[in-house]
Image (cartoon, rainbow, N blue to C red):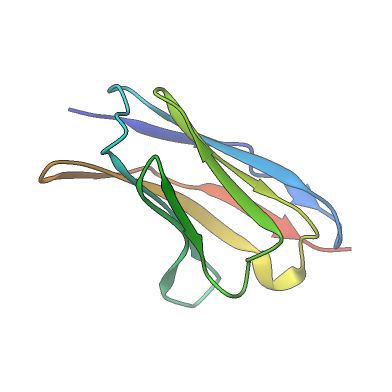
Length: 113
């Protein structure tokens, strides 16, 4: 059973930065699909950064220019800059190896003054 463990969530003021990390218990290959999702309080989970392969990373309009996703063979990170109150919520990572899909348990980010 593959485990994904997110970390890095915290309370931060508007305009601040955080770096989230998602460590995988299985090696991440260039073909491994990796995504980051955000679930705001009372809302549906939404995709904020997607990586269909090591060569492809795309962002939701709401975070483009502020968030940067990176990946290596052990983890994926999400660098979040200029955080705003709407960025508050739980951030989850998702990974897919072939047909096998896995979710992390999430890490809480709160943006508030």
